[in-house]
Image (cartoon, rainbow, N blue to C red; front, side, top):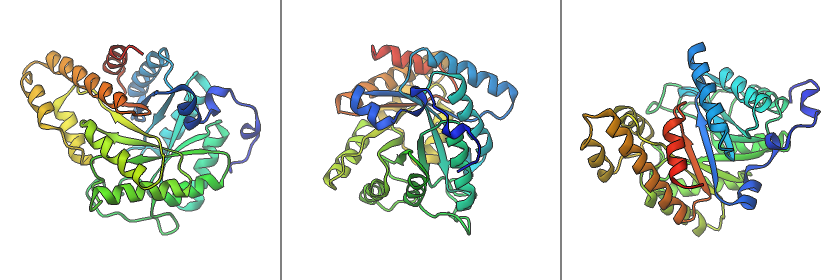
Length: 304
């Protein structure tokens, strides 16, 4: 753990509360994910989005790493700032990419010093980017379940993991994905957040496969309101998450009108959110792309 007195000082309950305990006590969760800014202007836009979303009192928020584990320092810094300067519950991201076990311990210590107690433990994208071969740091870890076990060994952390309803790009089958998720739970994971989904049936299938393996692991589906078709198509290609034909048709019908694309995107996200909640999803995790307006519109449409 990192040295210093910060980690032993009392922290506000909103910072340290356990995400799965909140899920059990309060019902459906609503959470938001951001990515770390690349410059001062982007950081200002990020904080404007955070402050707007703070007003709706989400269950938790998180800040990602960049592709290949980049922007780690900014991720740690922004997550710590959320812990200190807002009323939000932060969930810290941590990946195995390019880090030795000693370096991973140091990052966990930095999160602990900021009062963060919820960690999302990820293997992460290959250092060369999605689609390239995975290679672990020679003194690091090779799989997310190993990272889960490491974080759990370092203190009183609640650990979440990633889930892939539409199959991980490196996975041979959906059953293999469910087996991997169970191994993460065996290592100490207490909840999961899925890659963004556009098909509620994909989330249901993964949930049912995990339940059939004897695990009652909360899997929070990820949701991304479509405001830019090209951007979402690119992200879907990188992540392996397909766009359903019905969604593509609705977007293509208005592709020449950016405002209409945005309106349809919000409608699609609202319908998907309603279906997921009706199917028993423990909550919704919004990938905000550091924007707040579309996410807030979907949230308002749900009547929360």
